Structure formats: structure tokens, C-alpha cells
Length: 368
Ligand code: CXF
Ligand code: ZN
Ligand code: ZN
Image (cartoon, rainbow, N blue to C red; front, side, top):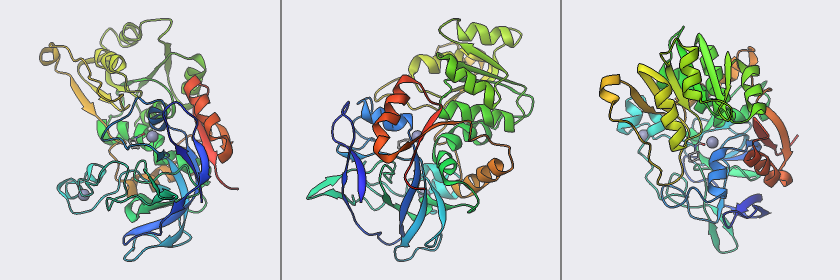
């Protein structure tokens, strides 16, 4: 089967024929329908993610995808061939402390080395060379093998190209608001960076009935997308200081919740500064390897909370189908988030566009 292999940072991925081993017990083989271009893949491409917990190269990237189940391995009970699924990059064992306390996205049951599937092995090979997986899947390929908890069945009337976005950006962004922060109706929120994740934070804010949803970005085209999905105010941080502007819009207080959807230390700090006294800064974006976030010593007096959000703290088997329902009911805007579709052969172009900030989300459609 064909897959896009990254051999070296800052070089294009190469589409070539790889061997993909059959599913082991508890795993399924899926045919990828569509897969999104996420900043996390790009972090691997430009070399800003390296060393554990990130996988060694060569690697097949891709972790935001929809798919159709082709075959199941022994002992699989959660899905069957023909099911339409959204892939999750957070497998769960159902037994560990995190799983039983309702945080399966933090599951510690699969401690295998970076670049492997849940049983600690790699299944992708080019000749004798083993290739790493990404996000415990590798969806920049025609097919993937994943743990059964990573393939979440959805309704068949859901279009698969839009479904793909629920696999990362939408769950991460909307979940940060609804699950991690639990934003209450009437609260004020701000979001820094309006790519796929930030636009989904905005939509989480709409679903939570936030009273003000302030979007910050450096690019006007992205702020336009932000308005389309529900931002009440937009701030171009090239033209004005976003922290001052947010304070001005909130009677000098700052917002109840400020979300960093990019994961750069200085932006995380801006989110901290934009939160009101007693408010919460939620760090959603994932920083380059080794980065630290500067938090001022005044934090006790200001009683602020800094919270990480991984994947929007989802229970994927609940959240994915629910987000699908929201889309089909017109409550979640996915069409507006996909600004361009690409063929698999154009995958490197999708990332060139991401680097330039052209798209809300670029989606690679494998078939149909
Ligand atoms: C990433 C984290 C590293 C593995 C793939 C997914 N998160 C979101 O983009
Ligand atoms: Zn992602
Ligand atoms: Zn677990």
C-alpha cells in the first residue's frame, strides 16, 4: 500500500509502496478515507519535534483521519468490517488508573516506545527498513492498523471528509472548552491562533453559550474564518497588543478563560496575561521540544489557573459520535473549516499551505 514517508526534516515526504503487517489481537485494519494536515505533523516535518516522546525518522505521519474498517484481528469486539470510523490517537486500555477514573485520553496502559503501535511494535516496512508510526496510527497512507479503541464507529450519513477533522482539531479545540475548562454559559473567552484547533475552540465557545468569544491571530484571512464560525470580536496581534485589546473589551478585567491554540511560550504567556484575576489559561497547542512557559510569581495573588488540555480531554466513544450529531444538526461548522481539499499526491502542497497560513484546515481526500 502507498504511504507518505518523511525521511528527513525539511524535505518533502515521499509517497512510496510500503508493507503493512496484518492486525494483531485487539487491532483493526482500516482504509483511510480522508486525513487532515495538522500542525503536529508539521512540527515533525520542520524538525521542531524530536527526541522522545516523538518518534524517530523515517516516519509516516498523519493522525487526524476518517476511515472504513476492512478487517479485524482476533478478539476485536468494538468494530466490524464495513464500519465508518473516526481514528483517535489516544488508545485506551480500560484498566489503568486513568481509564477507570474517566480520563482514558491519558491512559498509561500502552507504554511502548515512540513510533510504535500499542503492543510496542512497528508494522510499516520498506524492504527491511522499519518505519515509525505517528499518533499510534500513521494516516498519511492508504491503510492503517490501529488498536480497536482508536477506531470509533460513526453514522454512515456523515460525510467522511468532514468527519476526519473530528479526529484531531475539532475534538481538541471544542473539547478544551467543553471538557477541560467546562466553560459555563455567559463566560467570556479568548483564543490565540485561529487554525483548525482555534476555530474549534471558538465553536466550543458557541456551544457553551460564551458571551464574548475573542479571537486573536496574526493573519486577517484567519480572523475572517474566526468570524464565520462565531467569534464576536477579532484582534490582529500584528496591529495591536492582544492583551491590552482583550482587557479593553472586558471592562479592564481580562477574560474568564484564555486558550492558547498554538503552543508557543510567548503566546501561552499572553493567554495567562489575558485571563482575569481568578481566571484560567488553557494551554492546548503543543510547544516545540524543550520549550518552557514563563509564569509570573504574582500567580498566587491573582489566583489564576494554568491548565493543560490534551486532545480536549475526550472520551472518544462519546465525543466523536456527539460531534458528528452536532454537525448533522447544523450546530458544528465543519464545511467552513475545510478551506481546501487535496489529492494524496498533493500532500506536500497541503503542508506548504499550512506553513504559509493559507488554510483554516487542508484535508487530503484519499478516495471518492
Ligand atoms: C498530536 C500529539 C502527538 C501525536 C499525534 C497527535 N496531537 C495533536 O495534534
Ligand atoms: Zn493534530
Ligand atoms: Zn488505560
